[in-house]
Image (cartoon, rainbow, N blue to C red):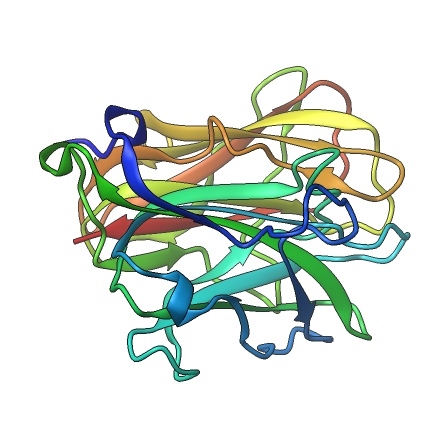
Length: 281
């Protein structure tokens, strides 16, 4: 059975945006640790707001400051079913560096099935490569009480494929108006049914360019597309990845090798890297 959000109406919806649309105060402020530190958990949904089991979530992260500094970054999301601050990570090491304005450019976004008990507190933490702390904004939408639960598949665990060096995932080189070669992210250890791609550029100087990035499964030659996303960057040193089409349901077995490749509309900047977060159970 596929996990398809649009097959359901959601009887419970929560957003952590409470003060209107303000580009400087969207969602919750989260401080990313310097020098690839783990970061400190910051609550984005209090236990009293989570009055139903959360089965689906959208996250957008952005409003990184614009500068010429390399701003590779990664985030984790966790929850405490007791409503406290002893968080268990739901996923880790989704790369999201240089994310632009959440409102103007949608920053970087991901969406995924989950199973977070009612009454849980939910939090985010993260770190970045550069020295000094950076404040980012995280905008969350939580969904529960599906109208057609028999058509919805909840996730009980996650796995991140792609070993980080600091906050940088495995690298790949997009082609110039053509597809670059597939680059391996690594091999799964668990079965999964949903894949979510994170992409960033490890470079102090970015070009104005748009790149389609694909996540595939196979042996590097015989490949099947799982999902794709678009990454745009500009000379203001900011990047964006939209919510759709990134993230897709696909049955992925344990022991499968995942790969990534890109197709840029110009000569691509160097430093493209990625991780894939898989959800199963």
